[in-house]
Image 1 (cartoon, rainbow, N blue to C red):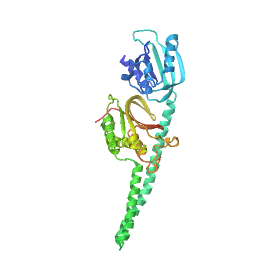
Image 2: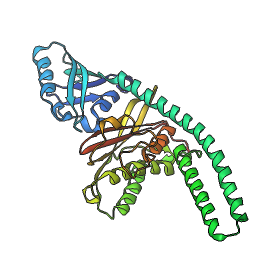
Image 3: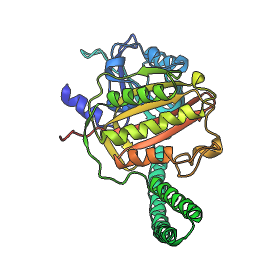
Length: 353
């Protein structure tokens, strides 16, 4: 039986086995990922409780039970418990009675899966290209800046009037400011210090920092998966990435009192990041109730210097994405007014201490 489950867990198609009462008997890893749930949460649960709006889903299952004939549905809309709507190709097959108790076998494949993989590959490639361009520009900018700063220091020593030296101090300060800006554009470049990291401890650490910044006025809802294993990551950089995302939510809120942030963690199996498939990934959702991201900005929200705020630098989310990418992960954003969700995917390969 364990061998059969291992085979099912390595399929990219979501599989759910139901009994005659439409209770879940088994689900594979792809099914868990597709329905944004876990095996422990759905075994023994009625199929109606897997979705927010299960009407058509239940009708299809009952139709197969009563007719004892397979049913195929193309592009069937399903509304997940999170409120997200997905479209799946659905195949429901009746199973002859046996000792397993399985009456229905449901196969599900998201219609947009290949498009999603292609889009992720494009995002990662675009970010790598952008960083290569920025590295080249940074080299061209920092060299002249060093010369300007050095010349200003020499000039300050030669000026007879201390009052005139203030002008050279302005040049030095501005040169330092530009150099700092270029360094921030490049993002973190130190070697990753990979260690076993408890994601929930990191989230709680950042939550405390944001609470302090908002004088404890920002509200938090936590929905953690306690079974989540440790992640191989650089703790300090992971804190920085999540802090940038949460701080962005705080900054776009009308007032700190109105800022509500939901922190959610889940594990997902057989998840693809770009063109690489991972047996297990950690998913971190950071959801806020802010005004949302303008549709014309959504595709470029992680690009450097892109911001919707007059006082923003446009570097926080870019740096967060760069940190996640260095961990072999991916960051995505979905947004509508009152509901913006940043999702971080981190591979959970075996931790080597």
